[in-house]
Length: 478
Image (cartoon, rainbow, N blue to C red):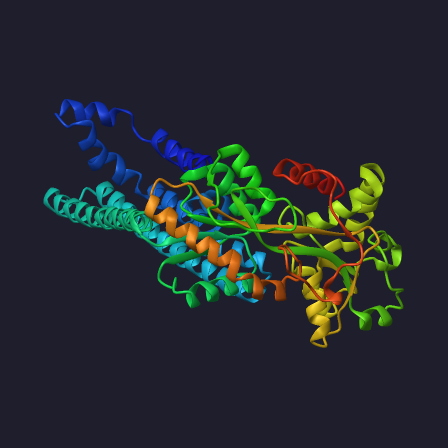
């Protein structure tokens, strides 16, 4: 709100400071109320500023993600937040198209505002000229009447449009709250979302839920900030974020169905998939650049890898946390800081906001080596793409994503949410483990090619606080 308030406030203050302060006194002497003076005198004389304020607010609401991310829900997702979501999937073509649409919309609104301001300026010039030439009184009255009519018409149109927009947003919000469908918030990849939706549809829940996807940082922010007031009934999210949100807000209810995870789990959440980190290379580019096959993350800090390495940014992608965990675990913070600094320098312009960004650059031959999710590299290799997975000697670290049910007051809806969560956990795993080959439950197995060579676990419990520490560690290396 501070972002939206400051500039329009200064614009309004500047416009009002230029007006004659005696207008209000004159209005009082004539028996006009403050509101009447505002409508008859102040608004017409500051209409140009009002148009500029509208233009500023409209354009900023279209492009400022931080100002609207917490307003996003299943019924109120806007184009800017969709772009942020697509960054999570590294869908740059779609991002480009949506960005052009936003630009053209803003340009159109800006041109309309400039046109209205120009018309108002021309009218003022014409009016002043006629007054200076002492036009006949009756003509002046007629002219003033016409101006007031046109000004009033414009004001009514703006007011009506604002009211319509406000009512529309209000109805959207009411529609979302009154829906009987279970709302699912997720940060999962497209493949996982598709599997979960297909499973739910096959089990007869097709019209009983609505799913909204977010990036990890956006959904994490909503969980921490909103607690059990969040729109979602079910959340699938990085396990450490769910645990941190529960510790802060006590927002999840205990699961009513049994699970048998391989690792210790909480009563209120169950893992649904796991992501393991690794290096991957494009052997064709390695040969072209006469580079040796790297065996560790530290190898990528060598001078010959300058601008030929791609890594994700920990500020935007949890995949990068797997990289930082490996460096700190193996080398400690002091030596690890130097390695990270050299690695960031070698990556240069190839530090990606999406976890799948590096592998896309390695596929395209833009860089020789990248760090990302192991299963993506293994799948590419199986499909004959020029990608080879390499398990770094620092270790293959894993992050799990879990599902949890929000403790809402609506018992009927909470019961349905629990049923849907059980279906996702028990019936989606058969397909999920094919895309994310990490065994999470008793009886699950993965093929040898999908087993990482140096599987490790970070010694400290993963949490949002630890993530923030490691983000600062990474940022200090820039």
